[in-house]
Image (cartoon, rainbow, N blue to C red; front, side, top):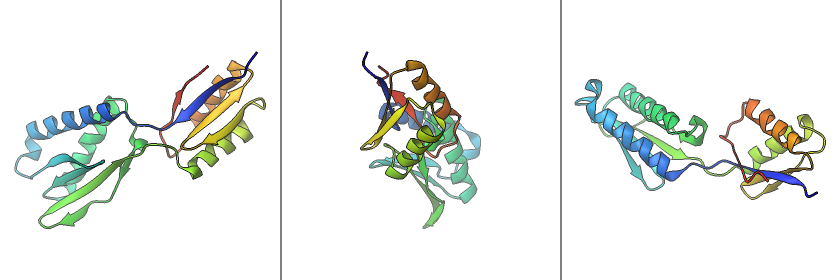
Length: 162
């Protein structure tokens, strides 16, 4: 019997991210505490640009965006949030979307699998994702549960389970 395998990836669904941004924009337009503070969220290339007239207001805009992302199934770890900075009379925050697993994170995940996972499980880094293989599907599921329980810096998805 051939080995079973799955891939570990970290990807953000672009359409879900756009839907979350649209919902956040609607909420910001309707909420009373955002009236007259110039609060907005807009795409600037692959990043999001959050604006408001005060630092605490732009942080509140970020909280609204994060809550909408969570509701759309996008983890907070998928967001690369910068610090608030002043730009003229307004404050801004740049938010990027993380796609792919960095080589450092991939090495950490592979080490966790090697040290704590079932002994029959093998992992290999393939670009910005990891392939995990074993003869036993139960061992692969145990590996998934192990990684879900760990507090990693990236949002992980498990795909191509065969």
